[in-house]
Image 1 (cartoon, rainbow, N blue to C red):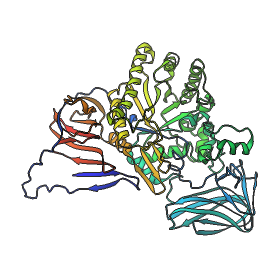
Image 2: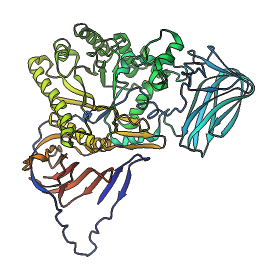
Image 3: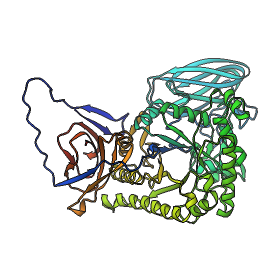
Image 4: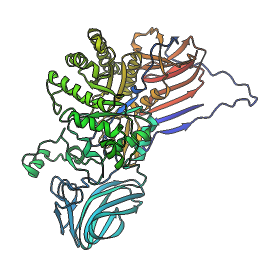
Amino acid sequence: MKRIRIACAALAAVTVFTATVCAGCGETSKPPAKPKTDLEYIATLNPQKKFEISPLIYGDFLEHLPGFLYETVWAELLLDRKFYYAAGTAGLSPWTVSDGVSSTEECYSDNGYAAVLSKGGAISQEVELAKTSYVGYFYASGDGTVEADVGGAKTQIRVSGAFKKYEFTAKNGAQGKRTVSFACTAGEVALDSLSLMPADHYHGMRRDTLDAMKDMGGTNYRYPGGNFVSGYDWQDGVGDRDKRPCRRNEAWFPETAGGEQADIDRLNGGYQFYGKIEPNDMGTDEYMLMCEYLGSEPYLAVNTGNGTAENAAALVEYCNGAATTAYGRKRAENGRAAPYAVRYWCVGNEMQGDWQIGHTSVAEYVKKHNAVAEAMKAVDGSILLSGCGDNAGFWTEEMFKHCADNLDFISEHMYANLYENTQTAAQHVLAMVNQVEWRIKNHRDLIEKRPAAAHVKIAFDEYAYFWDHTAGMRDALGIAAAMNVFIDNADVTSFANYAPSVFDRTSNTAPSCISVGTNGAALTAVGFVRRAYAREMQKNTAEVYIRQTDRNTSLNYTATVSDDGNTVTVAIVNPSEKSILFDFKGGKSILRAVKIAEDAGQVTETVTENPAYAAVAPQSVSIFTVLV
């Protein structure tokens, strides 16, 4: 049986099942004709196991950025719902206000403002509606009536007394950009901590995005960044979500001098709420619920920028401590009695770079890394830690020299050059492969020089082509080739986290695995490749040799083998314009074939069970599972 999946910017990948061949129906079937191809190659298989492959190389990355976490994973539709800026502040607030609206610092969330509405006053936002059922709420005080209007679906709510929560539902067939408003129709009320989400949200997260992420099969998610983490206090992101403080995003909007007018000048018309203000709506507990939903390992980063060893240790206790410990008790109070048992931790992000909050010399940083790591391990000695590297250069060597006892992985970040309009597909692939192989070679050289760090594996916990484009088939070829290199070097490579995992397709500026829009989420070409490798590749490295008689095919390939040694899976990246037929020497039959290629402007994944031949299409990624 063959099935085809299509990558598109629609709700999800479309699956089309073709007809199956009748078995045992009495008809004599002819063997299928040998396909016509440009070349015929022999792939010689050696099923002997070499190294076990870390499943963590099929990982992904999330960071608190607009279109990257908010507006994609996070389901909230209202911006600045806790009023960091007074509602209606020109150039800063996303809220439109009418006469009869003022602001007060006496608010439910204890930070920012509340909006005070007298009779006839209203606040509103334009939002994109795609569902028919929504749930919302607000906190209000005073004495009056509030009308919540979701694109024309109106609810009257009576308010009285001190701040408390008022919930409502809205069923609306309206699609597209619509106005959501809250109006006072009688009396006077103060509003704060408003929310509007699709009714099917999962603890505040979009189910369609989560389901696409689950389908992709990411084995771990690094969170919460990224440059963001170097200015992030995790304690701002736990507890009552409606009381969590809004903070300036220290990585991209840290300046405070001059007040609101200076903020307007700094933004210069480029205001984007989630890029500047962090509402702390998605925090540690929500992230852990996400990982549980996906069946993925958490990989939590701690702040070594402006953060402290004590705060990092407190996060470990919050996640892994018993409910009788100080921070374990807080976790239990927040709704989770049992520890999360987070095993993998990322100590800092790119601290070698002068762009990073808290950057310092490596001589000082190795002391900080050790202090943070030792404080974390004093809470839970079973955790495994990564540390900041610099392409296996001087900084990495100093980390190996001074921190080997407090390192299990060294973090390498890599964004390959992108020249879509000038490079051939083979050159595009090579730009990625060269970057990965160069770092691995440097790493091997360093652990020979610093044998005390020989146990330290590489964590490629951010990798992709450069941003500002949408991932297409060429990126898919390069990412598949990178994964081939990770697999071939399984003895030193333990993590790989593609960045970004998800992105808002309306922004159209990131080569994500999953493209998310108002109407749904769909795998991109890179997402198809990531999913296919996570699903198809086996547990151990093996060997395959392909003699390329036409050197211009520039194939990149690898092989894996099952624990019992009975099946070998071969992944072949073909960046050339030539089709190739393969004969697997040492194989008995082909059990399964997966092809990812572009056809008429759409990237498709075709899965064929028990194919008679192994044909590789031009500019494609093909994965064959062979009985040996």
